[in-house]
Amino acid sequence: MSVSIDQAFVKQFEADVHLAYQQMGTKLRSTIRSKSGVVGATTTFQKIGKGTASTKSRHGIVPVMNLNHTPVECTLQDYYAGDWVDALDELKINVDERRVVASAGAYALGRKTDELIIAAMNQTTQNVGDYSTGLTKALILSALEKLNENDVPDDGRRFAVVGVHQWNELLGIAEFSSADYVGSDLPFITGGEGKRWLGITWLLHNGLPVSSDNRDCFIYHASSIGHACGQEVKTDITWHGERAAHFISNSMSQGAVLIDNDGIVRVKCGE
Image (cartoon, rainbow, N blue to C red; front, top):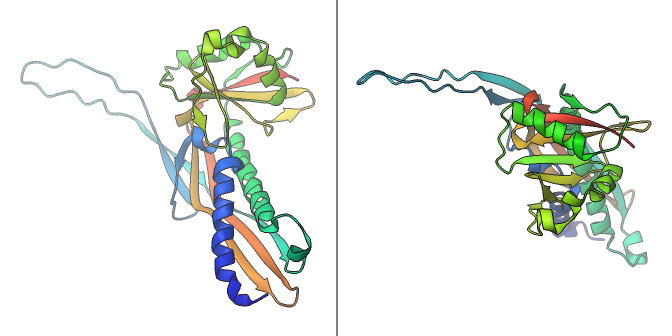
């Protein structure tokens, strides 16, 4: 295989990786506050407090709200996923090995992105349930009550992420599964399917924390979690003549952090 083929190979392969990462690699990135193009090892998200409106006298000075700004630091880390593609193997198989490896690398990095986000979610101290029951309507309403008590806005940016077993339990709730209650106009969430109910977009995810038969699910507002990206998914392909193969290395630099504890609730469910 000529070394000069690398340029076309690299460009097409990187396009495949990026597409797979965006479409199927990560389910949660588009549901939270995300910052791209970060320069450096850390970045800061600003948590802004509540303002208070006051009166003023005629011709008086408009009162200042003096909003409280609390910086929340997010540390970025570097992640890699690589594999070999043998030149002669490509001649002997009836599948597109390049696309297979591209998808595998994108999925691996996508799972890592969601792993970082879920780890940040897991820092919340707000909880409902005690693992003694599955995901019930009563538990969900208790979590919503906490969000409402904290004045978390109901602006269409509330999300919930649940496990496979909990998704099946949701389907047993008529208000969740019946079009008579939720309709059929569902939003599009990059990387996964979403279902709207109670003003929340519900997502299924296999990577939520689990211990024995205890599963943690989360209901949150998009602004409560921050995701920072210093480098989007990038692909480097190098031809190794001594191996007669390309080594394909995918990498990214990302991090996630809990910004506002008031905006996320852990729902403790039994499996």
